[in-house]
Length: 264
Image (tube, rainbow, N blue to C red):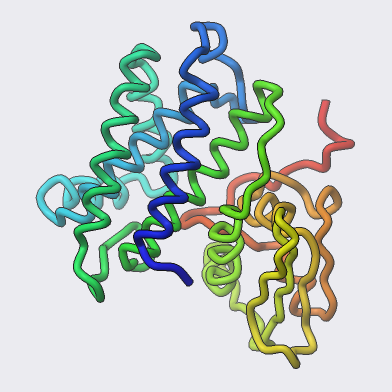
């Protein structure tokens, strides 16, 4: 979809936006709960920092990466949360400093990856552009959690296209994470971005179609909103089934988000 350079520029913009939101928070602000599972703003930034560092280790492909793979094999369902809980003990000012450092170093490392190189990951290996897209998706999703909890109205930008692209590309993987096989039927995806641009994926003549708001599709695909709360529509059995399992990220899907009307 995009070169690594273009994605990295958008990733930097997403990260800087989050930085602006959290840099002036006091301790109580950093302890604001952002998810039903109890993650605070501290957890969100710690997680972003840890994933940046894990990405740097994957690019280097040395002993540190081997140790991370071993941790993942020992505790595949909990090691990421365990690492986040370890880092969340860092004081907010220091945590923010380390996150700024990790994302800066990662941008440089990704820009230096030779074209055609595949980087190992906990899911399928990725190109530098794909890894940058995955980091943008994580930043967009966790940034949304932070903004939502702090009562910030997130500016809608066309950077969300990267999140949508990843949601479309991971259709088969989303089924795999649930122990299922994706239907063979092709799905046409037609979304409208915040600027009004139309973005499309898949064959024009596909009988199965997903249409609607790109922003809302990204919320659904990052599992931040339930289907009933987004402006995304499905035509055809395969398309309808996909919207029940769509996810942009590697790993288990976790708990399904509740409809907004059911949240206390």
